[in-house]
Length: 137
Image 1: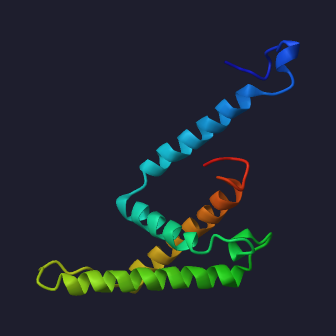
Image 2: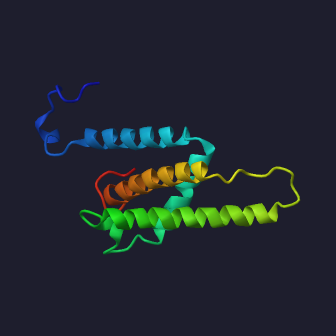
């Protein structure tokens, strides 16, 4: 139903109850699309979210009006370093297995780019979502 062209009774014109339905549909749509992410990207997103939880405080870099580009690059590098260390620990624990994971520079370049995009998305979500922001997604 198109609510923009519908004439509302006077008593309903003070608040727009339809806006919340629109907001909920945006959130549901985003959650559905995130479920379609590949498994490795889901794992990276979860890990990026966990790391940014530690940076979620008043005055943090993620809430600067214009975050410094180089600080965001350093944040990405530190997240990739953590991911690399975790993968090395998993590989050391699985020495008896025959399957050896490839550790190529191209792989880590791709992971670094993906982590950077996920960091930007997570910063946007934290700025404009949840308890601090307007949209809840």
